Structures are given as structure tokens and as C-alpha cells.
Image 1: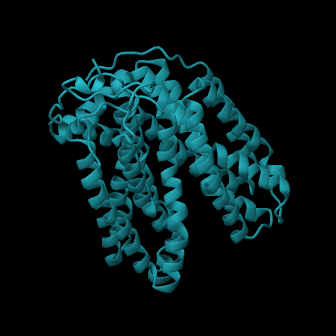
Image 2: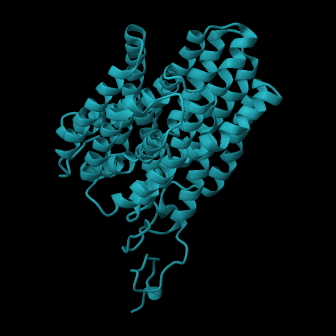
Length: 436
């Protein structure tokens, strides 16, 4: 009996006749476009803060408060977004998130007080982008792919960096030519333009289209209705998942490692590299250009890390990534100077390749250990990432204020990376049960 004679469609082995194009790749492509469309605001604050300060006379602290609230919500909303996707479906939550981002960006053109900026930049866009954060990539990967998961999660993770690279020059040019309001409307348009594409082409599960996940060879069962519930039910699911996962050593090892990851990327390099380079006599524009190169190599490193995750023990990859990052931070103080030397270029390339290379193996470990609750658990691990970034950003600033330089901050970060490498190397991959 051939595969074609079965009553229901199946995904055949690689040795048989096979779909030439599995719909999972369409879903992944739409998810990538959505991540790119939602990334506009990630590039906006650095470009728009100066025009806002010049027009309204607001202090940097007032503007930074809106950004800080955005970063906090960006991390903390992730596990609840994952729960909402389980309760109401990926497509509905993604579309709502894109509309919230668009609304926040569009309404920001009417702001007249710092409080209104906090509501738009901070709350609305924080909630929207948090729902479209790395937990979205983890959910898509886990739901639609049985194989090539590492590669797919790597590509989707790189989508955010790609979006920033695409939007940054556009926003900067728009802010200069038509003002910051025009730049905000471009961000709103980018998010809203993707929403119809998501609604048309993104599906909640493979069974909605009568197929199995990519790489599965089991017959496809009839599609069950999307689980229904309330927002409160999703909230309880997220909290109960945290309570159960927190009883395991693996969760804390992943959370500690990812908190250090956030501290040494967004918290330190992303926030303080430019002022630290300026302390050594380097022009701000030159330092900003070096940071942009980090973003370019971030894409390459994350995709390659995803490919490796499909082939190498994820905990070994994490240990290697954190160790390499720690060594590079240890040398950073001696590499900074007024001129761009080959040594600092080497640092930028290494750090770029390692920037979010930790994401695919972390997602893989959450999936292996926590099963179907993997995306939810990763949401909480990602929240730790953002908390680590926020704490490191503040502490590094305090170090600079009290010592006049960042040297101790870089050395402390190198030490933290050593801790993350050791903790990651001890992670056990045995599955555990996480009840609802």
C-alpha cells in the first residue's frame, strides 16, 4: 500500500515522495517578516531621543524612563504572551501585538508630556514588542518544526536584529528630513502593514492545514479546535508554569545564564560601549558605527548557532559562547583607543557573532527538558535576560560615575561570563513534568 492510498495525508520519509514545499516554511517566513516589522521601535529611541529633547526640553532621565519601562515590559510580558498563544492561538495574539505596536507609535506623535510618552513608548510599545519577542520565535519553532528547529530558531532570532538594521537608517533619515513624528509614523506603518500578512498566512498549528510538523512522518490527525480560555486563565497558566519550573535546577541554570547574557549584551555593550569608547577619545559616530557592525555579525552568528544547535549538545554550545564572551570582555579595556585598531575590529566581530548566539541552544534546552511547556518556560528565562540587562545598565553607570571609567564593569562582566559558562556546563537534559 502506498502513501497516496491512505485516507489521511502524511508526511513521508525523506526516501519517499515528499512535499516539495512544506507550509511550515511559509509560516516561518511570515513570522520572520512580522519580527522585522515589529523591530522598528527597537532602533528608534537612540535616534528620536535628541529631537524630543530639543523640542520639549525634557531631560534625558525623563526620556530614559519611558525606554526603561519599555525594556522591562519587553521582558516580563513574554511568558504571558506565550500562555496567550496557547489559549487563543498564535495568529490572534500576533495580530493584536502588531496593532498595539502600531497604535503606540502612531499615538506618540500627539504626546505633549513625559507621562504621555511613557504611555505610548513605554507601555503600549513595550507590551506589543514583548509579545513579539524571542518567545514568539520559540513558539513558532516548537509548533511547526520537528527537525531543523535550531536553524529556524536562529533565523527567527536574527529577525529582530535584521529589523533594526533595516529601520535604523530609515528612521534616522526620516527624523532629519520630516521630523521625529514622521519617523514614528514609519514605525507604525511597518507594524500595521505586516498584520494582514500574518492574518492571511500564519496558522496556529500544522493540523489546521492537514499536515504534520516539518520532519514528522506520523499520520496527520484531524485538527482540534484551538484551546479557548480567558486572559486570566492564560495568566494563571504562565504563573503556574513558573512555579513548577522553578522547582528544577535546570530552570535556574538557564535563567542565571540568560540573565548574564542580557547583562553583557543589552545592559553593558549595547548601553555603555559608545560612552566608554568616547572616554578613550573615539568619536561617537565612529563608536556607533562599530556597534552597528556588531548587529551585522549578530545575524551571521545567530543563524550559524541555530545550525550548530541541531548538531551539537546545546549546553556545550552555551558554555563555549559564554566563555568566549568573557575572554573578549577581559581584553576590551586594553583595546579601546581614539583610533580604530585591528584589535578592536576583532573584538567587534567576535562579540557580534556571539551576541544572541545563546538563544537557539537555550530554546532547545527549554524544549528538551520541559516539553510542551518549553516556550512558556523560555518566556520566563527571557524575562531574566531583560532583568539582567536592566541591572547591569544601572550598575555600570554607577561604576563610571564613581571611578571615572568602565574598566571594573568590563572585568566584572568577564567574571560573570565565567559563572554562566560553568553553570551552563552543568545543565541536565533529562525531561521533567510541568503541570498546568
